[in-house]
Image 1 (cartoon, rainbow over the protein chains, first blue to last red):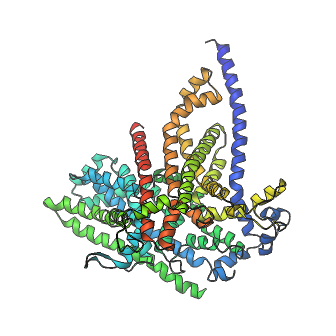
Image 2 (cartoon, rainbow over the protein chains, first blue to last red):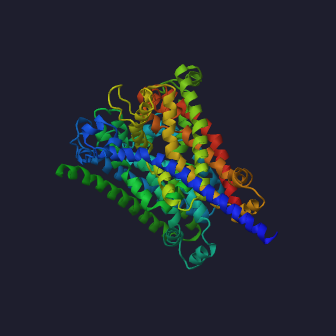
Image 3 (spheres, rainbow over the protein chains, first blue to last red):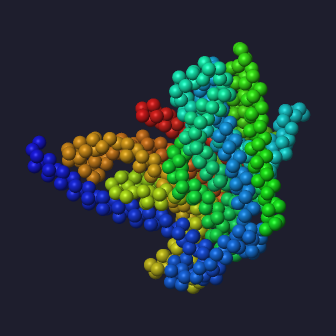
Length: 310
Length: 326
């Protein structure tokens, strides 16, 4: 190929690239703006006075900017009327109380199981691993009713009681436990992928030095598996924080245990009277996941990619 | 404020004590089990490390799944067996027909919408110089719960009676173009599609991020070589880029099918399943917890399970094959 021809193709490509890159930029930014407008509208609404929210669309804010934080004050401290008399803070606390153990428990239990299946091998190790892996096909809906019965009534065969009633329905433990159970198949699968790929020499050197499995687990596996653990933890955090179904089923809607997402969903049903409460409440609800999203985006992506099968 | 503290401090106490008890038990068991030596070392380690997970999986998924299948052959209160009656109800009840049609629409439309749009964005992003800001903003809804997203879109779909100021964005736009807005969420079958838009809004970013990673992984020299051969634009995409990302595309598509099959939150929050918008997962919840018909609810759960299983098996196989190649 002659030099001029190469140069020609090069300029041709340059031209095509330049053009398509400009088109690409315009298309992407147009969609991005469209994608951001709804969230932006909610944010703007949440800082407008009540009568403005009812009286005109949020875009009028830019013509008549009246700014107020009273909606947030009303939502947080419960001065906003009957639909939210105690404020949303108790529910926010409940979400935190639900989420932390519901992330820590499955992560620890799954890491232990994954290490055991990968490195403390016995005849059925592989079979068990695939069986656990296959449990991902069971939708949560299949477990709701039987689990709720287990929590309220225990388990019986005939008149014989196998498991006494646990009495944890409507308590935090009654939400931590289902979240832990439902998280395990995916968590064990992901962590097993990672932990089984740790260097064999390292493990064997530790065993030769006299370390038992528990020491190896704490001193070698846990620190080395941190990236996988972090990725799964973020996925699980989002899953639990944003969950509606498990919380609706296992937490009553009360101020004592219901998470903020459940409260927000119930506020939607009473709109009209509580528009201003709704928009500020929604922002309080999505604030923490958004902070996690923007500050830990790289790990967030990893967690989502890893957890996409759930 | 004081009453607030008196209510919520004990809650934090619950976190701390739950975590403390959990780790204390683990520490004690690890310590005792670590003392074992000789032939028993390995079985004990297996029992301690694997046991908790197996017990939880057994009690939380395996046994309940069989119980639900069992319940689906019994009546509302799980008292007597009624054979396949709950399933014939699903096949013959006109309300459930609407539910099944809606679910079918969801699993056909939303996966293609999210994955297709995600692919388009991924391709265009690849050509852009500064892609990080739009990428973040497009991906952001993924961090928002479906409930939060529903509230956000309430402000778009809000409708006020004519002559009142329209505070909903959609109504205002429609009026600007000289049409009369209708009460969107009550308008069947349009409302189904409006709910799907919320799902697409949340999930497109996910499809985009995964497909974007796949496109970036296409070797640059292959693209350059075919560009030298004269392939460009659509042709380049059809003959080179798409075949290279096809398997990822199918994985994302199948993931979206499963997600939309299990979809519950948007329908529950926006309409509660009323106005002809219910889907299987929502109907299952309504049957069990609103109408207290455990038999029918369980049968719907089983239907969901039957639909989800082949897609998930297919998807997991694909993911594993891709991993083994990579």
